[in-house]
Amino acid sequence: MSEHTYTVSGMTCGHCVTSVTEEIGGIEGVTGVVVDLPTGAVTVSSDRPLDDADVRAAVAEAGYELAG
Image (cartoon, rainbow, N blue to C red; front, side, top):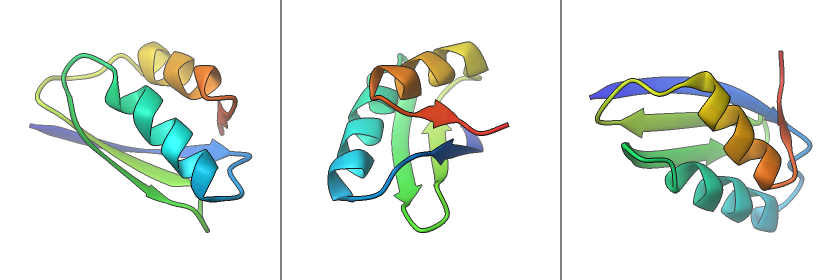
């Protein structure tokens, strides 16, 4: 199992959290997504290594972007 934390910019409410969680959760291999709204930290658990480009694309699909 793998775990990685990303920072997502632009999230301001519970709807933002839900959108990001659903999009990242749809990536093959993802087993969990935990979002900390105040900091923008998104911790993604997976049963295999994830491609950062896939995570970036999922966050963009939700209408936000990865910081950094």
